[in-house]
Image 1: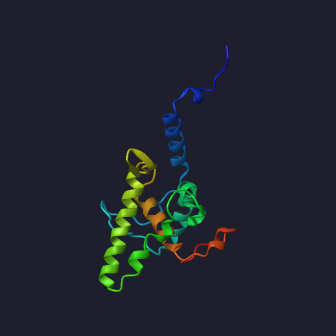
Image 2: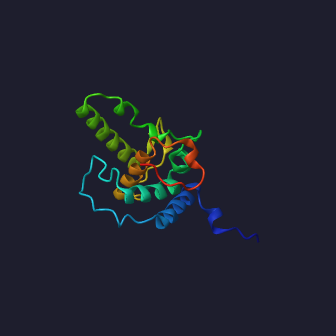
Image 3: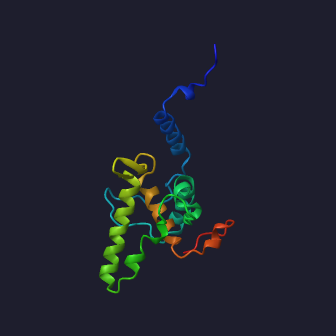
Length: 162
């Protein structure tokens, strides 16, 4: 009788579930970040150095495969997240710019939590239950910090530009 590894008998869905569950236990904790209220629509950790450092680690563990290491997209399948604010930053009226940035924060958070599915095809898995709100906002802070980073910063560990 042939020995078959127990994981080989599991469906693809269960193997992915086990993979994500094991990754969730390896994620850095967000304990050093301030606690959040129940509902947050705007990034509470914007320009927070601790959040940016945590966000970088979380991003590279969870998002880099589709969005590029250190948020430098070099042809990966996911969109370049550093360009999310492009339209907002071009606005001249400060109140409109701030509202646009708040809307982008909400869009980012909701997209990470719920994932992206179009015409029945999953383009991004939902991360609710894997990443907590503090971790999602930390990733958002890191992505914002990379907005103007030069492509050469992907080489080596040169820190995060703020």
